[in-house]
Length: 281
Image (cartoon, rainbow, N blue to C red; front, top):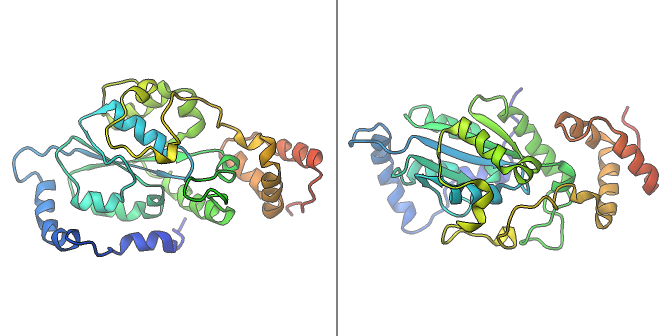
């Protein structure tokens, strides 16, 4: 499968924005950082760069907080950072480096290419969530509109299908890590080999100072109330709209992703809500 054209929002990430004094210092740092990555200045500490990415509104911020709170010998930033920028100029002082940014799903090839000539392991954690919950989700920065459009979701899905083919990726479902964080902790430990210092279930007791919790609307124990949130009556109109837009193609994607065994949910939903939509040929 050929990679689709990079969306403009991701293409912009490849073009540096001038920031003083960072933009003047970084070009000078690049040769030095390359030598550091080769281990030419004594013991090289950084072993693995872990990149969290995937679908927006799929729990990446929550998972980032859990990891930053519960994993040792980890350099992290408490907010979204571009994987490529941190790969090039970030600290190498810890064994593990963590970055989180959903839009890095579009730049996986570029991140892989950067590390192909460096003796640092690269691991991608790809997050996913029931599309119906993603497509009915709001964001604190856009409280009056749905955060993810169907067009944006489908574009991300194309890149997602390419990303999961790599041996350097692991998939984490939002629904599974909020309902069984211990299982997700073990899954990631087996995949990455990092040092667990606290159980994921206790992340709320160890929030790192300075972590940006704005998108979480506060820090609290894990709960599953946001799983299948799309079933709430307040989202009825949105679900009807999605079914009309997608002409039932949404149901096939849910089956492919393992969120539904068949399309009976839609048939029942359409019958109950009297929604008129075309059948897929």
